[in-house]
Structures are given as structure tokens and as C-alpha cells.
Image (cartoon, rainbow over all chains, first blue to last red; front, side, top):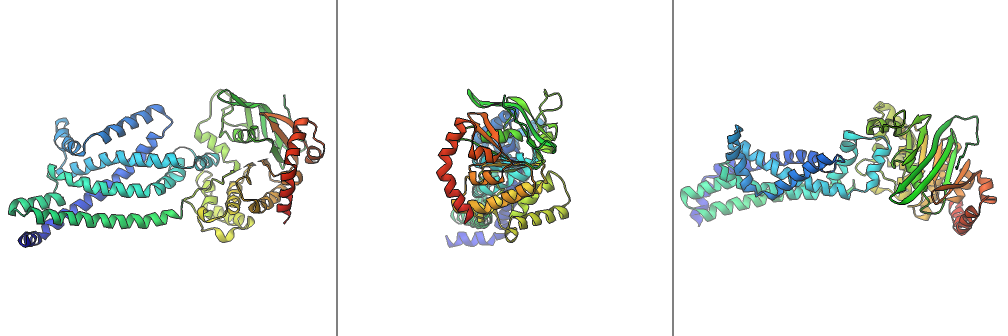
Length: 218
Length: 273
């Protein structure tokens, strides 16, 4: 047992590399998924029926595909159509697209719960189209959705662990490779779990901080 | 026909409604409403709840689209392009709506913006006026409504009366040709009604053109230049406040005023104190 942790500690560079990859992947995917989710939420709420219906199909389909399978499809499936990514990029694309659907759905929920009068006031004062969305609708929607966005961020971090199967050198992948070489499964995986836990704690704290800021603006 | 012509022939007509009708499903909310408002008028619309007052107000800036009839602001058709067959785009409609300020029953301030930002938002981003000028205007307006010290506070931290005064400042900031008030004091605690009424009185005195849906009979009695009484989606009676409140011409108006007599007395006290 002690030996296991000693070996894991000896390979701390490798674990750290994995952690950095996990953080990078998760944060970039979260930012991209959020941006894409905003656009998708707008499409879901659109009064143009074809737009709303296509967005609805897209979001529902994405939410019904197991993430593992989706990651396989992006990495191993897309090359048949001539689209080839490095494993890291494939991981980012899969994480982003998959979570954009969830982001869209939670933003839509916050949007639906927004007092109608706020948006009406936007109309009454002459806001229309993109400026109405960008200046009047989106900010309060995001403020209301912050706790749920934080939840999704944690989901993204955990989903990123699946990317080991498409050989992305993230935290789970590194832990797995250390345990496979030296056969120290307990130590390597517990270390990884603790690092994930720490990461999620940091996210929780950040979301709570932003949430307090949002509280005044609700 | 409910043709109501403005009393002051000398002033130009700011707002005109021609035979506006509106139904929600099978319920006829407005039928054949015609109305003119001249510059500088304070028109108070009163009537029982559910009579169509708010819908009428909302038809003016096309928040509700009338089923038939036409609305003109300064002679320009609202909501429809010339000819009356093609609906305006949201953008075109926005350019007309920005000439109209609106004050909402539940304030409808934008919660993510500070008081000052709320007031500056439409002038900056719809009217594209210069920031320095807009800021100066907004600060002057907040001063006018007595909230200069609250400029950097978010709406959630204000009382109802303060929120509504910000709502009025926001509506004035677009330099409107017309101000619409949709029951501006109905959502307020009785002791907060007075502070909003004071601001509205001042606007009436300044000659702002206003259409006000209200239950504040005390205010209507001495600030309105003309009263419109609506019941069941129709204009039943119109006239000067003096005539309307002392000698209403119709039974329906008389009954309505009687029901208000007690509430009215209490409000007068609240405003006076």
C-alpha cells in the first residue's frame, strides 16, 4: 500500500500532466459548451418553428446518446467522413458538443422562469432581435442559471475521465497507465479520485462566489 | 362609434387610435376603440378590472397586436407599414417604440443592471446616443425623481416606490413623445403610493403627454386633462375630470364611481399626508 503511493508519488509529473490536461480540457469545453448552449437556447426559444424544432431534436438526441459512445463516434467514426482530430481535439469536440445540449436545456429552463415583464419592457423600449437577446434576456438568464452551470461544469470534469478510452492523456489515463505499469491500482486511482475531488471543491467555491455576486442582481 | 376628439384643438395630435378591436380567443377585450391624444394632455383611463384598460394601453405600442383598426403616433402608423397590409419587422417597430416611454405595474426594471444603467440602457443601445450625454440626462432624471443617491444600487435593493420612480426615470430617458403608465401604483404598498404620485403630478404639470391607466381617482381628478371610462372593452364615457367625477353622464360610470368612493377617500388621505 505504502509502496503503491510511493510509486505514484515518484510519477507525480505524469499525474500533474494528467491533471493539467483535465483542467484545460474541462475549462475549454465548458466555455465552448456554454457559448454554444446560449445559441442553442435562443434557437429553442425561437418563435421560428422550424428553428425551434430542429434545435429541440438536436438537444434531445444529444442527451440520449451515452457520452462514451459519442466520444467513440467523434474519434473513430468521423475519420470515415474525412474528419480527423488528434485525440485531444476529439476529446474537446466531444465534451463541448455533448455538454452544449445540457447547457442549452438549463439555460432554456432559466429563460422560461424569467418574469415575462422584463422581456416585455425590452420590447417596449425598442429592443429587438440580437440586441434584445444579448442585453435584456441573456444576462438575467445566466445569473439565474449560475448554480446549474456550476453543476454542469462538475459533470464536464467527470465526463472528461471517459476520454481515456480515446487515449487523451488526462488524469484518469495517467493514473491508469501508472497502475498498469507497476500494478498499484489502489494508490493510483485513489490519488486520481482525490485530485478530482479537489478540483470539484475549487469549482464549487468559485461558483458560490459568483453566485453571491449574482444574488444582488436578481 | 366611440369617437373621442381631443379637447385642445390647437395642439397637434400625438396619438390616434382608429377603431381598434382585440379579442383573446372568443373573449372580445376591446371593441372599436377610437381616441385622440393631443400634445401635453394627461389622459386617465379608468374602469372596472377586466374592462380592457391595460390591453388598450398595450395596443398603443403593439405589445398586443390589435385584430383590427389602426394606431398612429405623430401621424405614423404603428406596427404596420404604409398601406396597412404588411406588418413591421421587430427592428422597425423598435424605432417607433423608442418614441414611447412605458411604466409597468410591476416595475419591470432589468435586475442585472444598476439603477443608472437601467435608465441609460435604451438611450444607449436602441437610440445609440452618445454615452456622455446619456449619462448626464440619466443623472438629471434620477435627481428629478429623488434617487440620485441610489444610482449604483441594483433594483432588488429598492423599495417598490423607489423602483417605480426608477421606472419613470427610465421611461423619460428616451425623450418620449408619449408616456404610457400601466397601473403604476397598483403593486405598491399604500404608504408608497404617494411618492410615485408626486412625480407623476410633476410630469403632468410640465406638459408631458401621458396616457395613464390608474385606480388612483384622487390623482386622476386633479392631474388629468381628460378622463376616459372604459367598461367591457368599450369607451363608455369621456370628459373633463370635473364633469366626470361630479356629474357622470352614464349609469355605468356613476356605479363605478360609487364603488370607488370609499377607497378614494382613503387614498386622498394617503396622498395628502
